Structure formats: C-alpha cells, structure tokens
Amino acid sequence: MTKLTRLEVNCTTGEVQEIELTAEEIKQRETDTAIAKIEADERAQAEADKLAAKASAHAKLAKLGLLPDEIAALL
Amino acid sequence: MANTYTKIASVSVGSGGAATIDFSSIPTTYTDLLIKVSSRTSATGVAENLLVKFNNSSATFSNKTLRGSGSAAVSYSFTTNGFGGFLNAATSTSSTFGNTEIYIPNYAGSTNKSFSSDSVTENNATEAYALLAAGLWSTTTAINQITLYSDSSGTIQQYSTATLYGISNT
Image (cartoon, rainbow over all chains, first blue to last red; front, side, top):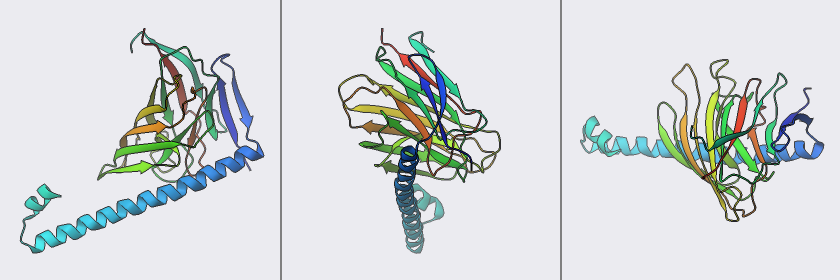
C-alpha cells in the first residue's frame, strides 16, 4: 500500500519536505473525508430535488397551455 | 501582474502524489495572499472538491458557491469544510488539470478571514465545471499555514502545482 505523504513548503526557509502522514493525521483525514461526503450527499440531494421541482413546474405550466418558449422564459 | 505581487513559495507534486500541500510559516509581512493551483486528483469522477485548511483547522468555515457544469447552473453552501475550488479528477481527460485561484485579503489581521475563489476544470466532454465561491473562516488569528487537499480520500497527483503569492498594498 502506498504511504500517504504531505508536501510541506516552509515559506520562511523555502525548504520543501515530503513527510509521511502520522496515524493521527490519517485519522483526521478520514474524519474530514467522512464529513465532506455527508455534505456532498446533501448537496447532491438538494440539486436533485431542485431539478425534480423544475420538471414538475414545467409539466404543470405546459398543462396550463404555456408554450415551451414561454415556460423557458419563466424557469 | 502588478509589481506588488511577490512569489513566496511554489511546489510541484512528485511521482508518488501527495495527500496534502502545506504552505507553512507564512510571513505576516504582506497585506493579502493569492494561491494559484493547477491540480489533479486520484479521486473518481470528472472533478473533485479542492478543500483548504487554515492553520491546520477545518473548523468555522462557511461558503457560498455558484457553479456551472456545462449543462446547468446551481448554487450551494459548504458549512463543514473550507472550500477552495475544483481539481480535475480521475475520469477527466488524461493529463489535464483544474485551475484555481484563491484570494485571501487581510490574512494577517485580527478579524475573521474572508476569501474568494475562482476555479475551472478541463475535460474534453460536456461535463466540465466553472465556479465562483465566497468563503469565510470565522477565526481572528493570523493565517500562518494553508493546507490544500482533495476531497473523497483522493491524493493530489504528479505535476500538480501550487504557488503562493504575497501582495502588498504599498
């Protein structure tokens, strides 16, 4: 398994180091990833809900007799 | 670029990839900071989030983003991570990279730190992204370390680069 490393640039000295992640850093990375995934899933769901609402609105407006160009101007 | 820009540090990722890129010991002698990133991640998908930490903290960040995908535009919020932009991901056209700029005004001041990002991905297909983001780090300490990393456990791939500039208003 490839070891995870971080690339650290010391902005004062200019030194660049490739440092293997500690167990604590790997655990923190896993936590960050898990949190990010939850938020990404919530965003994806919100996007899907918005698209579904838009499709529903489109269908209802079409039933009312609006032409596609008129609906596009509204949505 | 205005002559008040100074390159503080630059880094290129080597063959093994990197979990994070860290700019540490950032001097407090500038007014603002600008980071330019060209990056690709091993994570799946066309694009993946480029996240940031300040002073090794991912807490107290909030963000609003406007994003176009090539077929739709959406806006959304981040509340649990610092959002910097996008990296190209594993299924985007090979050997292409996402481009991101992150601007951090008054990074050394004693107020909360706002920042803005603009970012694009490259892909020889319909799905590619462009975004603008406004972020806030609700912490008053000066920023002395900036960490860049890929969401979803991806590692930053070889030939990705990041350059940190300091900007003085005088």
